[in-house]
Length: 452
Image: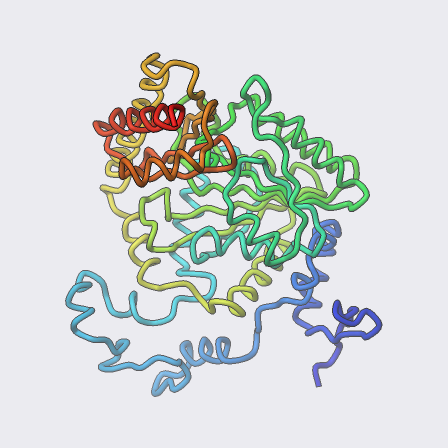
């Protein structure tokens, strides 16, 4: 028997009580005791999920600590006291010990990697200095982190608030997978600053629901825009007002491109200012080595929570591990080893700065070209950009999709069409000396279509 078992209504059959695992109930009680508003933010899955304390993982851990003669618990093969491996693989990875490559990483990630990433986060975000945050949990890059948030907090019909210029995967992750209701607001004001009033209006419209999930993505994909300090304060104020109006707000800082700030803008994640803001605000930071450290295919990301209550943070971490255990079990071990090794290297900061300057040079070159008058003002304007990988043109005379097709088939140039007027260009993957030719081709393409 399970002993004391909590119960809740089954979402498929509201008239039938569903048994809840005692571990999930204990985590829920810890969250309630720390902040009942956060408990109310959880989805049905978020309330039900837990990380098993008894089972294969816990028994393997116990055996690892005490079974000194034979350990016949772990689901890997060993040889000569190390994980069994093939020479055709190890010969190419000989700088690393087999134990740091082939065995399973813990569901939460390599402990040292989590510690080093936390130290990096605190160093780069001074506003977190006096805040209480969880230990970052390793995710399979940022999409996985966002998916964890969706599973833990998004119920069908919940408002998912983000601007009209956004990464399309949000809709799949929160709308399609979890049946959230997408609520968009214009990213920019007429003065081309961040539309904090639009965010506030979208938030306050959820008063009857009493809950909202807000996605903040800076530098923004697709525009490459990061707000300034004043705009950042306005964003925080909008979220605070919603909380004061009785709305529970899950705020996700999607910091995929964190650190690539080329001009005068916020240089920190808003996660720091949102931490400890109000009992009805739960800040969550999603970040990772993927783009920050130029290791896209390594798929190493992190999810971090902020709360004044440490027991609540511990419970959220356990629920996060439950989602990981139920989906991917654990992240890739080699990638975590590679990233940890890089972060600890004395050459890391110098090499990262070198790549930053290359990226900044490309962004500055694009802006100089567009401001030079070479292309006139009649064919396009551009949305503000000061960071990240991308920028967006707003086309005045032709369709973005028509131009995209024309460019790819007639000039061998690939771009991304977004809606009727917006064309996204990733300067991140174009050499600086090639950028003028690229924009010359885009301009030529526009003129071709105008004549057609």
